[in-house]
Length: 234
Ligand code: CA
Image 1 (cartoon, helix red, strand yellow):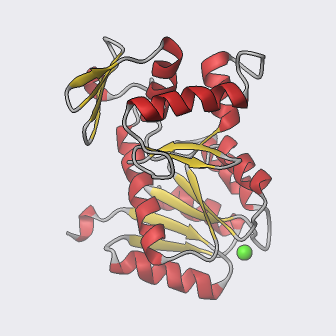
Image 2 (tube, rainbow, N blue to C red; image 1 turned 60 degrees about the vertical axis):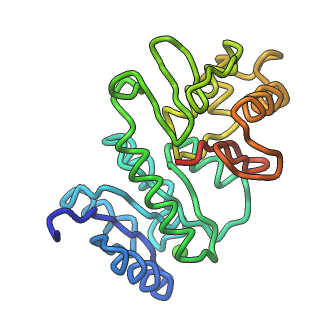
């Protein structure tokens, strides 16, 4: 099965964390390629074309954001940012620059593997026009028919407004990815306007979650990271 392994480029200068993450990934059956600097990571990225990149933001030779923008100019390879920073601004910047998700240190191996699986799956879902093959999206009991613009829960139609549908379709096209408030608002309303505000987004999102059966305080389909954004859980 060796030839079937996903290749993961791990960019982390701290030996302890690098060894820990590499061990967790190896044990889970992934092939791990290790880099300790931004320059080293660029070379390895070019020669190995990894399926996923796990990126520490604080690297000795450059900010991890530099590697993020370098990779995004070339490909949609999923990137999970490792951050010791609790600053929400850094997370939002990384997500808006094209990171798929982030994990704040310290993290458990279960959380790490869940994010890795979600990011790899997200990449499989995505197609170049942002649509899914076949025009249908299925996630457990939730089904979206993109051509008919209809949503079903347990095969029963869920009545959504146009805006609610557009938001849910956007999240589904980015399933598993944490979408920042700003990126959703920009995609749905064009930009920050009285129509496109965080408050308005939250109201729409509350309606969507109620309609697809998400209970407050529980994470079912849609996860909300306060102050950051929303993710449709793969
Ligand atoms: Ca570091």
